[in-house]
Image (spheres, rainbow, N blue to C red):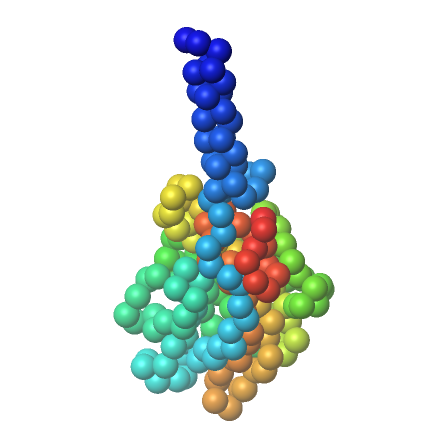
Length: 188
């Protein structure tokens, strides 16, 4: 190979590596984030004592409320426990066998920018009230980087014991492998 062809070949390899690095956009080798993070305001109705047609659960992957009678594609549900305390239940607490989780935090909702990788309550109900802030991890979802969870942060805005309703704001990072929980396009 002539020196000129060798230089062109090396330049092509370096350019290819630079493009690959740009496509990954971070040190973890993840593809560039595609979905911007946004805050949604959501209401869930208790599993018991409300009409079956009302949504009682939330799907992080779909960023939507769901009815528990029509899907198993959910990450947590809302109900009142035996002493009338409002609770959120991850999937294992609902005996669905897939591992989603909840973790209380004292950090203010707007200040949360990164979800933790561990410490989630996977198998029992978490009592909540107005003002409670939680980290949420979804069950594993299949994407280009493999089966990984998605992350979210949740802030309880209101508990209505008469209507048996929970109103909250939630920010979901739908980018596979990312834990960034700031508004806009995540970087981690």
